[in-house]
Amino acid sequence: MKIAFKAGDPAKHACDLLLVPVFGAALKGRALDLDAALGGLAGRCLTQGDLGTSAGATLLLPIAGGLKASRVLLFQCGEDGALEGLREGLAAAFSAACKSPAKSLACLLSDGTAAGFDAAVLTEETVLAAHYARYRFHRYLKTAKPVAAASLALLQSGRAGAAQQKALTRAEALAKGIALTRTLGDEPGNVCHPTYLAKEAQRIAKAHSTVKVEVLSEAEMKRLGMGAFLAVSAGSAQPGKLIVLRYSGGARNAAPHVLVGKGITFDTGGISLKPGPGMDEMKYDMCGAASVLGTLSAVAEAQLPVNVIGVIAAAENMPSGVATRPGDIVKTMSGQTVEILNTDAEGRLVLCDALTYAERFKPASVVDIATLTGAAVIALGSPATALYANNDDLASALLEAGEGTGDRAWRMPLWEAYQKQLKSNFADMANIGGREAGSVTAACFLARFTKAYPWAHLDIAGSAWRTGADKGATGRPVRLLMRYLEAQCV
Image (cartoon, rainbow, N blue to C red; front, top):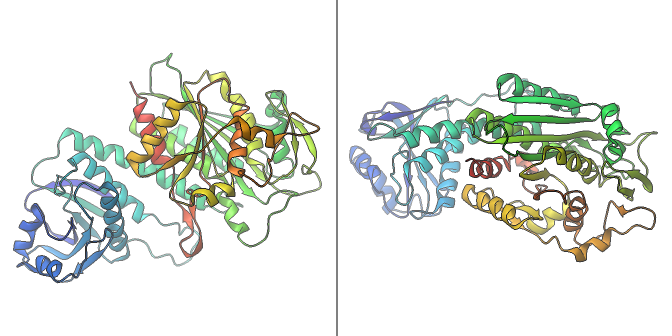
């Protein structure tokens, strides 16, 4: 979608569909001027209660009257200054627009129509909503119907300022990274395997001179002593890969911020086989890895002045005659041993070796992102990502980034009292801690490998994809991570 600022009278802008925001019960700002050209039609519809006041409601006016736009879509954003309502309104408006035959869109939002928002915020939110609504994963459909909307004009009274232009550029980069994350998540497991992820990393590096990639083979991981990682990939014909992307945008000697992504490209559970119903969704078990690739792509596209390293632990968890068995004991790269009581608790096994590997970068911070536990879904559902951290400043920075973007996280306990659940009679630890507090004990397991640096763990099992009729990857938590990394720029 081509997006550009357009100055001038919105009533004279020709387009197929004009999107007009409503805040509360009445039109405000330039929307009032626009309604004058409509002969007061929009105002009368609001007075009659045709739109309502709940954020996310939309109302199509089929005849635009005195406008050059063919049609007008009113969308409700709730009260002035409510960012969540603005996002709901924009999401609903662009969802409706992208389902319509309209090819050219225009939106009356980019220069402060809404009280309580500056123009840069409005620009970013509008651009992200437009791109998000336009996303489709139809590459395997023989008769896929493409989205008609090809252009979006951001209508405003004057020329866009530097802050708005910067917001547009940033939002376009972020939208591209989110779309990449969604696409990788939606790809089937027979296509998106560890080697595919490695090639995707190389594609990003080819597109950006600031990104370098290294891919470690199973033989190299064996020499490093990554016994936990290799225990997961042992049962699959697809070889595991440790993928390392280095983005150099900051000072040469500045410590990097490391993102570690769980990349289980398909998770059968291994010998501890999962139930059949819903197993198709286990292609999404690599969404942590996808979010790292999406974030690195966005960071490079936006040319952020910060150093970032992405480490992706990519493997497929399959049952076979050579697969790891429940009760097997493996030695991790850290030297600690693990009794594998359940082969379906595999994410923490690939991550623990990846987290140990991250020490060599002498990181300023390490954040791992993983669809780690169903327990996180039970605890928080889909609105919030579960956050664990061994550093309060890092936790606060991530929480703040989540609140600022609407890609929220909620901090969970990482208390020593939970560690006893990981006790094993035969190894330094077990890979599961029993039925109680499953998300917490998984984080406690990872914490044993992160004592050398500030670390946070994002369990995105509830937020990385939607299930049911609207099944698909969400692209979270790319926006949270991008905001966090922006805050680290100096």
